[in-house]
Image (cartoon, rainbow, N blue to C red; front, side, top):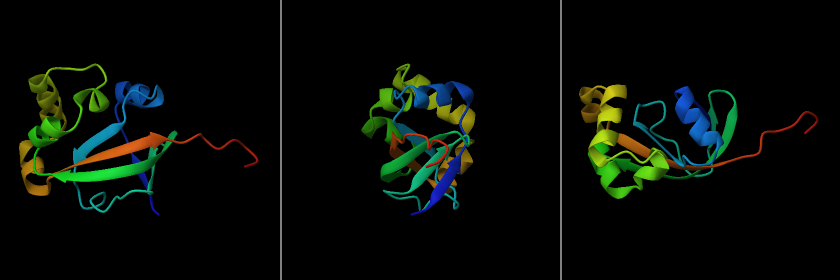
Length: 115
């Protein structure tokens, strides 16, 4: 089991905290390509989560066809708007070179002092 530190924009961190965002989609960079079920994620060094499953895709378009958009973007944008968001975050050449991963996760309770 590995721990991955992932950083997200503040608005997405709020969606993760609230429990509405349950799938994190990223370019499959070499440093996260091997993430798997039971691994842990620490979002922005604040929010702990456990990986439930990981699916690899060739493109963001493919992810949006197969995964529920509202679990990726809880404000439920249209298919085209969701695709545009990804392309604003990641250049197309990175998507083409590395592929894409969809990470399903569940929140963990943060550890309190003394645990």
